Image 1: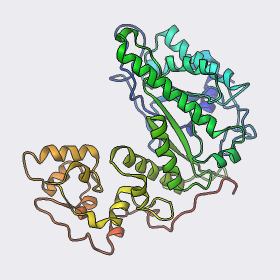
Image 2 (image 1 turned 30 degrees about the vertical axis):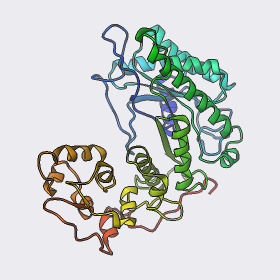
Image 3 (image 1 turned 180 degrees about the vertical axis):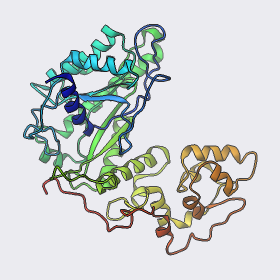
Image 4 (image 1 turned 90 degrees about the vertical axis):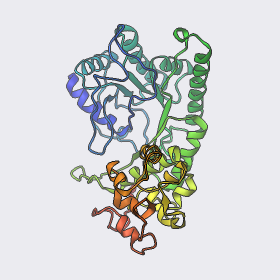
Length: 417
């Protein structure tokens, strides 16, 4: 099998691993030697059809795996075509793609072969070779094997910008059922170990001279949770995510829609229910982290533990709390403005800055590229006072005009269907 064939197989196999952009790490460039950078010019971003950023070379070292996780396409019992890169091949691919300005760094994961330690050692060798032998200054994200030895994880943190361990599923009992070789408490202990090492490195950096500051995954850690492989509702998923953020200070929880396709000829459309659910969870996650919403408030916009698929979580919450509106854009504090449907954090900050010099009018929102149709029912401006807030058909007016939005509520496909 030549390198091109391996790349086709192992890049495709990696698409089920949620990626990340090169943010949050230390700033490095090659102006004083080496190759690559973590930010600035010379970085090309590409996007998948579903909106995911794929600016990293995202590949698996191998898609062969000793584990038989029921939700994984690369499980031991799967009949997918297998391939394996050598360490040298991954290093050369990364350098070649970077020199062509096609990527900003490397996202490397792997199926577990031989043993967790052996697999982790191969991942570390790739990162170490890039850094030490080739002076690579670009971004590196390594997936960490939960059962790997602490010494190997320590080495990984020296060379990688970000480390991640997949939580896999939101509930321990379903993980044990669908992935018997994996153990949620063990995964959490590994994530806790990463948190301690990251915090120790930051504490040491505050007291050490900059040149001597220790380095351990400066961009922190993240995790991935599969959505739809078990019967967990959105409330359970967001509860788990909230606990993960609080307990392990994660930079990000990535949600990955499980979309079983029994017939290989059947292609799910972009608005298929699993991807819409994943999108709503990302929106809810954003409200948790940056908009001051609690999990209970977000879930109040849905029904029976599930988010509203037809509306974004903030709009769904606002419709259930109409007594909190309208909000006066010329007087309301920032925390109230953040709860207005259609207003993002950056837009809110621009409005607060603008109203120091002039009264906010509806046309000002248009200049900021805000959706007037979405915002108007919930705000008061100098030239506008809403009339539709109590209208019985307000929800229908706010639902995007797509076939899916007006369809009956979909049912997540079963893993065993």
